[in-house]
Amino acid sequence: MSLFKKDLTEASEEKNFSQHLADLDFEEGQLAVDVYEQNNKLIVKSTIAGAKPEDIDITLSGDMLTIKGRREMDSFIDHKDYLYRECYWGRFSRTLILPFEVDENSIDVDLDKGVLTIILSKAKVQKETKIKIK
Picture 1 (cartoon, rainbow, N blue to C red):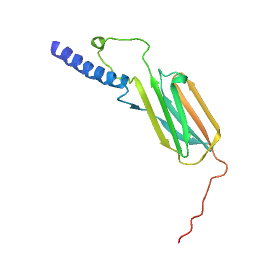
Picture 2: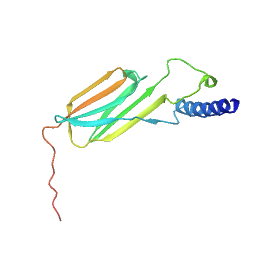
Picture 3: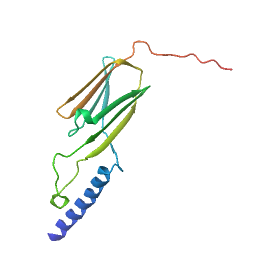
Picture 4: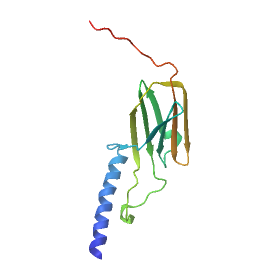
């Protein structure tokens, strides 16, 4: 039984070390997202519990949507008290290449109960450029 506890403690210390790296900004977690299309809109959803709206940065650049932020624990827990430590705390980001042009004046963002929802409307006029062969 003590061997099992020792293994858990060692595993906890390894995860704690990973968390310290994240706190030092050496490591950045990749944000998990769900993306789907519905009624000519692109919907991006992500669970980001622990992040405050002011700690989230969302940018649209051409056909790329980037979500960056930081999750912080609300209290300190000593690493020796952990039995399991699987939640990611620290910086995170995700960049998505959008499948179509969006109307940048018609973007809705909501953060409710730890779920971030971004709704992007498809641009009414898709830019198309004719390219001639020389």
